[in-house]
Image (cartoon, rainbow, N blue to C red; front, side, top):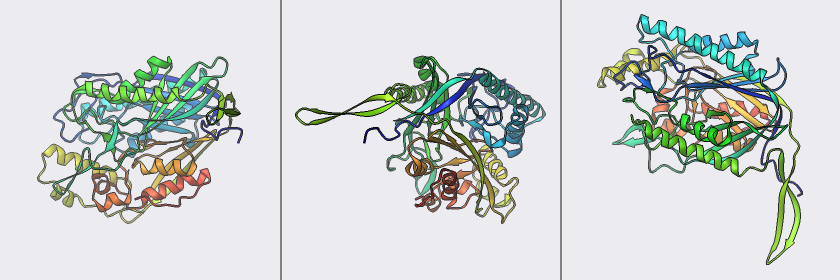
Length: 460
């Protein structure tokens, strides 16, 4: 062996990045918790931003990745309206756009259910603002593209913990101290200019629900994601784009608080873990090559950085996966199930159930879209719902470590994709989703097919 295996899957080509502010006016509803006693935020912890990354020099074959500090789309119609405006304005192939939400639960309510006339009017104007910001950021990223390279490293953060807790035989959403070790993998992308090796951008793909801030919080916030970006940007002098990973069962141990200092602490931890991962990567454009042996008390193998070839290929594919639908309770059954709850909490659960059923007929499979991008030797796999971390672990096991999995992308965020055992335990995501047990495996198979790998093992 004279060269290391592909420890840094690298892409070389035109790359651009740009950012816009998408902090909503306080008139836009910001109620993302059933237990919340307020409809609107009273201030801003950190601005909400939208960042666009463009890969490729062409106009028809470039890939556009947009990450926004938003919650989740409450309906397919609302999401489609925003994404359609972006696609039309930029004349993009739908397979080449990923509109991703970091899934902070301290942002605006992206749906009209339960809104009065003034709130609906405010949301309509805000959605147009988000679409315009996405278009403007993408155009700016296109105009500022330079020849660059994107390389990947792997780190680890201990923020994420299993949140499928059992209390008195009841499944709740909270830290499960007796859970097996969870996936804290931190995938870091480093974008550097070919001309001078300066850092142009950092990509962070990490799986952990941004639910540090809970029902009593009244400030708009990207949750821990904001502090993560700040730490990385202060150190690198370049924008940091955050991508929420397969975090269906993962969240901070300490969460649902109103103290933004906790979100800051969480974010700084992930930010420093990102910098640690960057610090272990070889210099831009290099890989490790074997120099030979040095005889000492033992024979020492010497490796040192050497210039490395890069892949210039880009490919995008959108696949539709038919997922079996599990039985869906009627309105009357839902009302009876949650009749003992506070009215706001019960209404929130019924609204989510209605959102799930909208556009999906009983007895028919759920048509579930998945986007698969190949960027040099790495891959990005995105889908609308909330997959458990098994998905990213399986894809990386089968394809290699440099696979970024993106939850909450290009669609409403109601559809959980839990592991099979979660259905047996009746965890919240398992009874809340339309998708029947085994759906997570089918999504993995669909994602691996364009990458040339069949799935051999089922989720547990």
